Length: 362
Image (cartoon, rainbow, N blue to C red; front, side, top):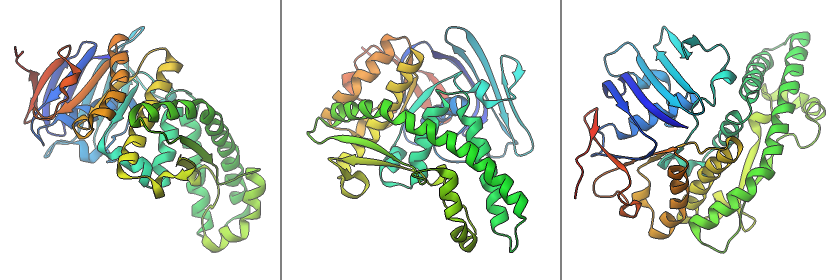
């Protein structure tokens, strides 16, 4: 799988962009604030329908414009054409000329994994970020997962709205509770089944990056430890007092542990950085195993921050992506791009919202 063509209109600082990309390694070079990360963000948006920077659609529109357009041609076993338009008043998404009605029919058209400085929050940030890590992995491997997640979120919003009322309608509350339990039980089952499959990958990825003796593992901790319906019923009085749903997949946690201890509490900054990279490597390795081809890798200016040991553990993943005719997009400045990547790459110059092939240097 690879991104063959990218087209942007009024996206971030790009008024117009048309670019063709072959399989392989693409190095985006330029000073800060020129638009390198914006290209990775556009690719990730086309893959997942969200920005890895955690912003909404309004922040992606070029200043002074009404909306943005992002389009792509994807080459896999078959070719696909993606067109996306977003404005506060209008939203359109089409695949091969037909409007997308179900997100499950779209996700997987382009698979991408991003490595960025925000990944550190996976270790020390809020639990919702680690839940999102699981949800994104499951959404890209199970077409039914994202619709299930949306059904759960809708039931949760409605149920919480009722709980905030002084005298909620009992039959309506029971109906939304039933929907919450049905969707939530399935979400937790998917998450439980995922963990044994990714824990060995995570441990191996951490060893490759950190080269250390400590053991790294993941532990799924659902907020409902036994029967979801039974525990929800037991908490009815507390829910009434606090006016909120206290149990369910929205309160689950993914514990990250080094030698059995909480990484968030006890890991050093270097260990946290290794864990964050290992988690994203795990995501890429798992998607490769499930789909038989690597995802597109998007690496946003992190290689220059890594020491030689961590780079060495990271490079085999990049090499496998190249050998499998997938793609790697990496942003760097001229001063900090890792020279050990060699010469078998395509260099692009990014300057003030423009992208052009960089001159080949002898």
